[in-house]
Image (tube, rainbow, N blue to C red):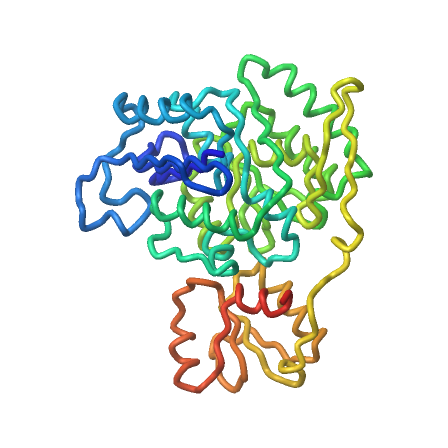
Length: 374
């Protein structure tokens, strides 16, 4: 496999590519590596998100170096939230549009379905992987390599790769797939989605298919929004609002990929396409997948636990788990008069410092998740 990570300054391809890192892996061993970036301020390069680097999107020297290592080994590309990286690489002609790309988020979700989150920081902490320089291409690509080694995902599903020249047929297929999903798919069951930005697929069609998959759809980013699905040229106000509410952002390709492969967000089934019949057959996973494996932790019985420092998407899940254990849960921002505080990994909260002053036991979400599954 070829593990890739890139850093950019925003969510749109126009924001450019600033840093790229590549690891070539054979039998779990790194056999080659590549780091691309033109430093303009060495003091900023560990700040992440491409800071300290110049835009190398259309730099032929760096682009050709990337192409050379890809062509030399010709292995599938693995990336975390791969549709995001792929979008930039294809747009700037670093990668052919039909090159096989796989998403480690999906592979981890299938292999380890009971994790609270699949963000890079969370899975790194959960699997005890060092991530000293997060949000740098070099730091993240090595972190992902070590996460994959420890997590050992066995099921990899390629990204859906829509071709602009096939727009009409793809739109038709998307519509037909949406009609098939009506009443049978729960891919987005109970989720509230907002679509924004220009898309190669009609926005109304995307919304109708989301509803067919069990979702509700809105036009504005609000507290109950679960996902913001972004096309091109997304308004900055919606991105800012989503970040403020800690709502995850995904690309149109991510949504289309789930629709075509019917990947349930909570129960990621492996969909196998039968080309001879042009139908999708579901490979049902072990029934134990559906049953919760979380242990009862007696140390939380009768205790008071604060979860104010958890992201909303994780908070709701943790509250239910704690209440089932007999714990008393509160979301008060004061953080006083509690025994434990469970917080988002790598979160920088004033409450955490106050908690230490009151001798409240602090537990990172990934650590709590591990306690439940050990």
